[in-house]
Length: 110
Length: 112
Image (cartoon, rainbow over all chains, first blue to last red; front, side, top):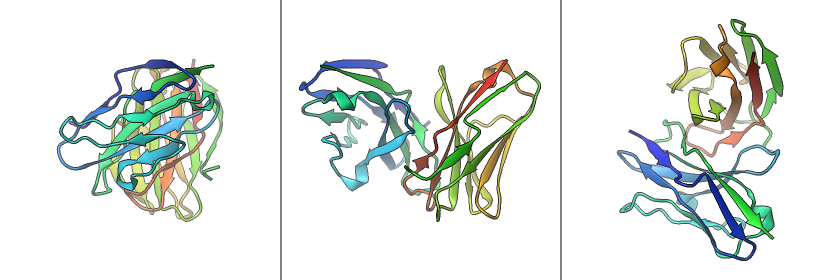
């Protein structure tokens, strides 16, 4: 069964501290992994996807197939990073829908 | 702004009623997806349309139906509404199946 687990509902860090939002998945096949972010009063938007290997707003995520994880990291948190973060997966074939985790609320304290 | 629009923004109705939620995808996008977001279930995929045809179904109840019209806008119909149907309903669009999905602002449905 396809499943995405985000173990932390809420993560609070101080400004300038490193951030790691955890995401584990289960999928029989080759998944594509994503991180979506939802800032206050805004729509859900794509932050990054593993195949593009980009760093967006200082965030990176590495797909670890051995540990079936796709943790989101940022070395120095900013107050504007406070938001809801969702990890999601889909199949590489493109015909499978996104399966989302339940989200982690990141709160960056000044 | 991602370009996906949804109407209405808010909808309050009573149990047993029927409502229609509307989604207009980004210009050029052929795929439309519907998701339901509730406090206990999180974001759940409901249904996917590509160029007017249903492509995939998720956890969509039989009381719910959707369609994508020739102009590519989509409607999600919810009937015999129950209290538990209260949720945020998101629409997303992409160029094709498997491409990056862009989300609309959502419709908040409250069933009293």
